[in-house]
Image 1 (tube, helix red, strand yellow):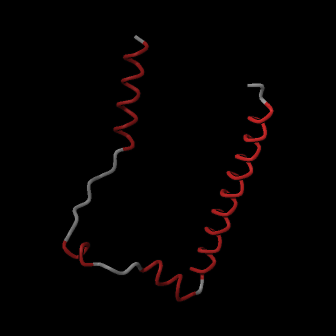
Image 2 (cartoon, helix red, strand yellow):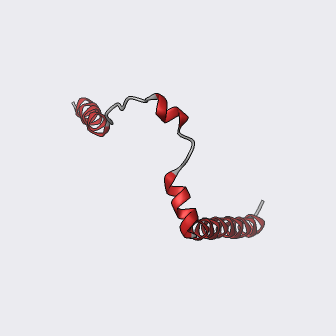
Amino acid sequence: MKKLLTIAVLLFSLNVLAQEKIEVTESDYSNSSVEMADQMRADGKIYVLVGIIAIIFVGIAVYVVSTDRRISKLEKNLPS
């Protein structure tokens, strides 16, 4: 009974989250400009966005490297 209830809830939630289908036209394929990026570049905000993404990437890289070093120290201390 519990499995059936779980399946029913899962199917209901998938139906609720489904998106409506939007027809793709020929003009969608020929559109090569991104208006938001062009506007951000014109305002100079695109560089702020790139800077924030770079800071986040560097932060994640530092975290991964420091975690790797800690794990390496712990592995050396384990008796073999």
